[in-house]
Length: 304
Image (cartoon, rainbow, N blue to C red):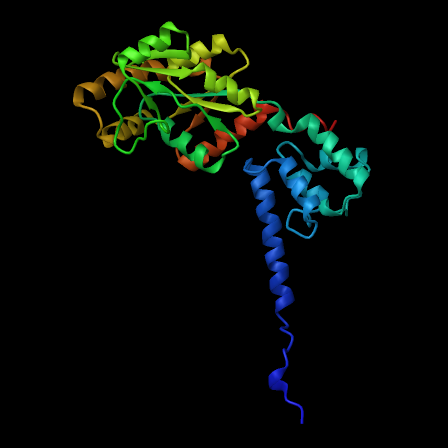
């Protein structure tokens, strides 16, 4: 007498659920590529290591189409140039096709064109918060830690947010030309960017994001003509005032002084390569990263 209780009956919905999960996995990879959270080389190499993974199951046309600047016409043209059929999956490419893709990536991979990026803007606009979001969500972009003579604010960690140094140590670093740029901000504290740490990151092939003030940005422009200067602006003057007052870290006199400085800083926007309006922290950070990716290398340069 047979018993069906001991048998594993097929689940008619299992295949459908697996297909949904697979689509979600591929969609997540495409989103990460489009946002710059993953590089094109990383995704390709993972696809060739694990052809049945979400990267490997991506069609080559989907992979290329997720890269910034790669519209349908450019994707079609590039795939013809690389001799890859439209139906081909990334993990299913043959050895010769993989080498062709690697060769194209050698020309367009942003990681091979490290750039120095400056993020500046008026007081209380949120430079530190936007930079922190980039640090947490886009780890491929290095950030320089500035030295400052001011005291730490609540929650700030020495060596992470700033290197807090004495006036004597700062004087020594100035005398020994250790700074890429430095300035006295709000007629009070001094800030500076150590030259050695920035150069080391660039030499390693990493782009570097500097969060500095207007004076420092002007010095970097002179020292590094290829640097890209981004101005972080508030949605409005009233919102800037609200943020400064809401921060509650300055006295009334300090707020007045900072707002006077902010008026001068806002007038400097034409000196910058682009302006990012900080209405939403996450969106502003993503826009900063997009500017960095464009500056590192035009993703369409190999698709002509």
